[in-house]
Image 1 (cartoon, rainbow, N blue to C red):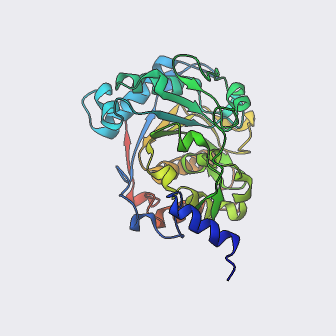
Image 2: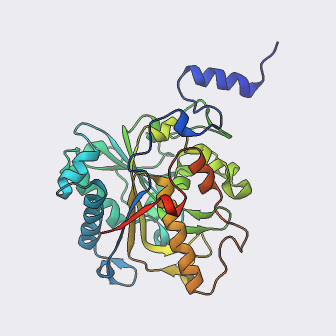
Length: 329
């Protein structure tokens, strides 16, 4: 009997420990999500020195306030130290596809790096990454492949690349970035909150489309179940420690590309360890802003992010607002 190619790859990759398995709820196969349903929202109008110019010190204050609230630790160093250990290699997955106008801010990543260093993480063990060197550069990041200090480069760099074998997670089969599989022990998900013309919203869960070689294949049906499926992968779930969603400037219509007429200078951060809850709060923020601007809801526009509820069914986090504890810091 000749095995089908997909069946053969499932057997091969399952033996190698790279497979998330069939589409079953994650809760049946993995540890519970830390701080499930807890999201800390931080807003501060002082963060804008002037339009489109951020105050890095205020961003750092906001981040640390939020992390102290999330972890219930007495100070920022203790908060960071409760999540990361000396000797670990930490990857910051940013989102730079839309260029400088609406990408993860450099100021926020600098604040995260400072926090990690306060926890004893060596700068050389921190890497800021996304799909390509070009996208990182366009978003304002300074590439650093081999020099001292914090490294910054894309999967397309010759130092990284993709794994040579497919890994499956539900309906998603992809080559994963080696920056996920080989360069870090822990991940910090640092998305930017945006409207998305196909998926409705893009934030934490969809940010990992930038970790696989073929994301364009997984936008049918508004990304449902593919966004949720991808996030069941143990390559992500066993490493993600923290989500810091950049909502300092939010694209509430016309996304995911940069459309300045629909930018909201929200001045906010959403911080949590539950990516589904973070995305649900971000979705609510976008809907509130759309209503203020006289725009139809995403559901009325035929692009409600139904993948959120699929992710919740899988056990990836809380999507029901009644199950979310939204705190302010």
